[in-house]
Image (cartoon, rainbow, N blue to C red):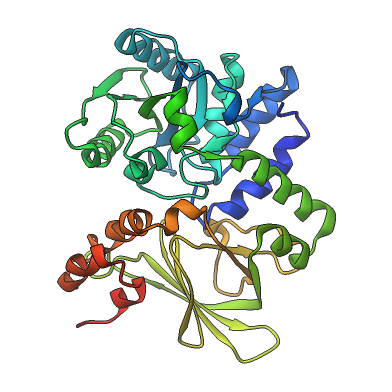
Length: 363
């Protein structure tokens, strides 16, 4: 069960696992606080679900600048569940978040509690990614289903991308942009048997544990011991470079200098953190998880709060093992390589799992 007091821990842990993505949690976290005051949210282990049950993967999409004014409503959730039941000829039995980071986990959790549906202790990323197609069922080649999407007015759209599942991103983004608000989307409906095979188990519990460690220990050593990660030290942001998306596959570059030494870090972001350099040497790259935390409280800092002068502690950890398989690396890195328009060679080499560092150099 997810209790009221768990929301604070889940917020800290999910931000830590988000790798800088997942959107701001303020509104979504408040919704979960409100829901858990009424009753706890039922958290179910993946191994305990029925093979024949239907599991809906749920996330949201839309501009963060208008989500506070045009946030997702219960009308959208009820309408999308009804449409899914009509098309699938069966009631949705379980909800699972698309990702574990930031608001990505709180929105599905709130609606699961509101509808008295259990939420699975699992997700499809084990971190945050910005692309729907990078969900773990696609990694395990689970057959695609029709997708469902609802806009701010509660209108439901059925997206049939079963022949080309990668097109879901393109169509969903267009609908989200046209709606001028936050949209709710079910990119995939799977069976319990498929869920056991393809979802990443235990990620909500992992986020809760990390959040409790942050609050109770305030120690990077304790956090990295649990995550099997590494703490690289404390640094301050001295410069932030913005790139045009047509020129590079990264939106931002953060330049950091060590607080107590002369080390220099470079951190590249494209919705999430993808590359981390220390003195010119790559020390983490996607799908690795890079997190910037407050240097003394150890609480993760959202990307929107990072400005020149911000002091941070730099942590890295490995993502779930499935992302380090040949197919996992190919899926993650193809998304970045294919965004690079002036480095045409990168698209050719993406299938060979070449390091992302090649994106920063011309052939």
